[in-house]
Image 1 (cartoon, rainbow, N blue to C red):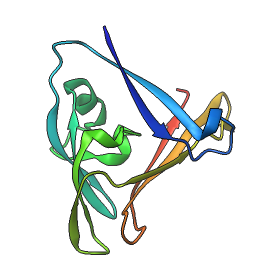
Image 2 (cartoon, helix red, strand yellow):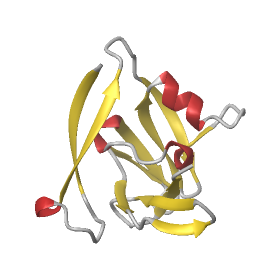
Image 3 (cartoon, rainbow, N blue to C red):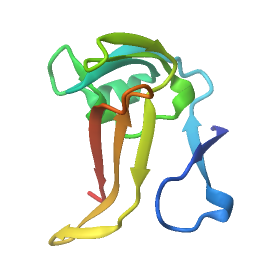
Image 4 (cartoon, rainbow, N blue to C red):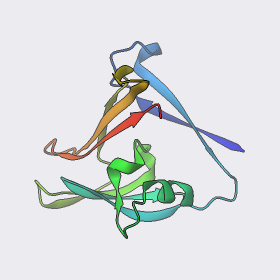
Length: 133
């Protein structure tokens, strides 16, 4: 497997050496990325996904939802549309997240919660949550 080192700024309150969080993404060498439209309640984004990510995010309907993908690295986005601005922007929406590691139910821990936001008006395009199960 090939590892790609991607750097994203951490917005969580935990100390992570100089505010930088390192995320390692493992992809098969021959795995292709395909651009897909990801829907959110406050807009949508176009991002490059693997077939595995697309399958994970699918709810059995033709649309793929941004909240089902979780956090993607900013370099995977090509453009996004904000409903509030009624405008399309190049690149990635702002990604704000934290790692609360709080128990929300019996043996269920909220590992990460985050938001995709418009870089111009700060409108929330989509929310996501990641649990231990």
